[in-house]
Length: 76
Image 1 (cartoon, rainbow, N blue to C red):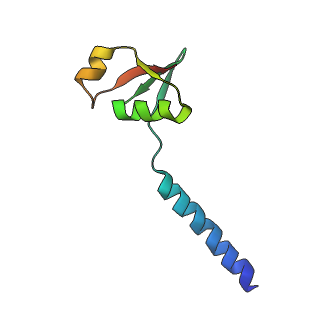
Image 2: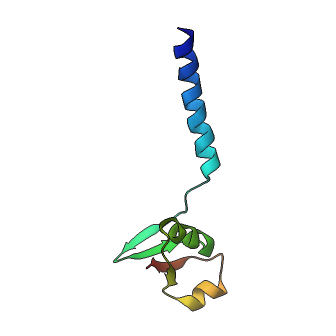
Image 3: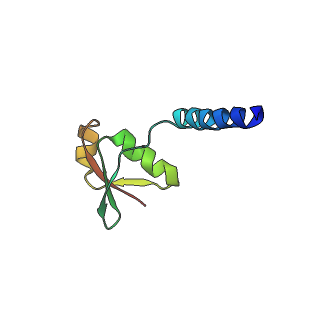
């Protein structure tokens, strides 16, 4: 009886620790035809890095000028 109680407490605790250690997921919107939109350049880079794909901005001037602004891109 004591083992099952311990297991019932340890499993959710392990899931909580794993969720906190992984960090937040990047915020991404899919616009269609392989085009994505993210609120920051850093989140766009993190999203494409998940797949090991190179990133290409659709408007490089906007991405370079406003790193905290919304960017449109493709993960090629």
